[in-house]
Image (cartoon, rainbow, N blue to C red; front, side, top):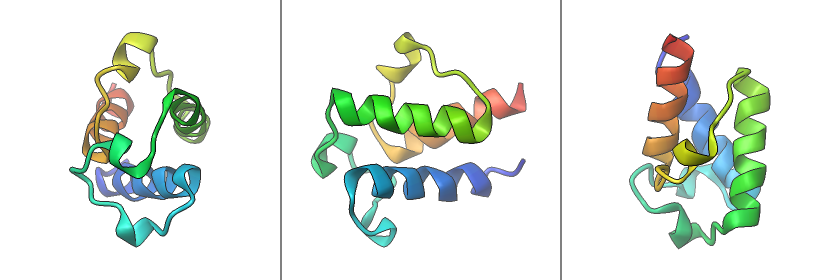
Length: 80
């Protein structure tokens, strides 16, 4: 899978969870700026895990601050 697929789906998932248009997502803006909290993060990571068939470990989740961070983690996991 190419890098663009997780990138597009990453911002789509963030937008869906945060209930904002995906075109308003800046990939380098901290997720907290969009109102992300721990409950929404669990929903986000669950949706990402389901779509891509990967597991995001709790320690990894704490390293995700931006959509770019999320996409990078998904890309690494998909690459094996």
